[in-house]
Image (cartoon, rainbow, N blue to C red; front, side):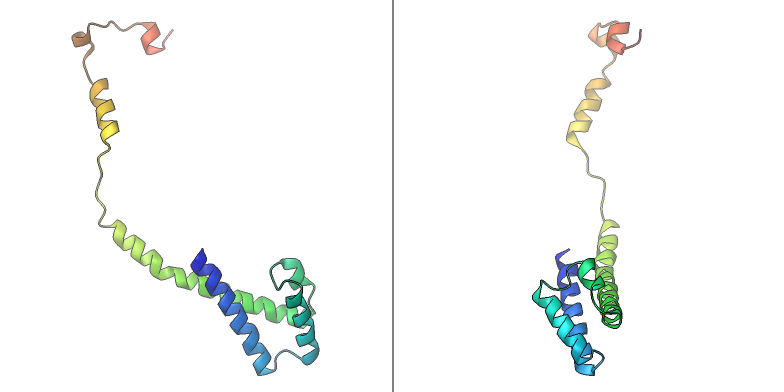
Length: 122
C-alpha cells in the first residue's frame, strides 16, 4: 500500500507538472488548479468534479496513468511471491497431530462404551 500510495502521488504530481510545462493547462485553469490545491488538493472526487470540464479530464487522465503505473509496479512482487510459493513445503502442525493421535485411541483400550451422550446422537 505504501508503494502504491507513494507512486500514485509522485505520478500525479509529475503528470500535472508536465501538463503545466507543455501548455496543456491554460493560465485560467492554472489559477483554478492552484485554488484547489490550496483547499487541500485533489484528494476527493468532489474536488475533481468541481474543476472545469477540460481541466477535470486532464486530471482524470493523469490519475488513470498513475493508477496504471501502480498496478504495473506490483507485477514484480506478484512474480516473486508466486515463485517463492513453489518452494514451500508442508509444515506439520504439532497441535493437530496431538489431537488426532488422542482421537485415534481405540475405545476398547479406554473401556468406554459409546452412548448417545458422548456421541451427541439422540
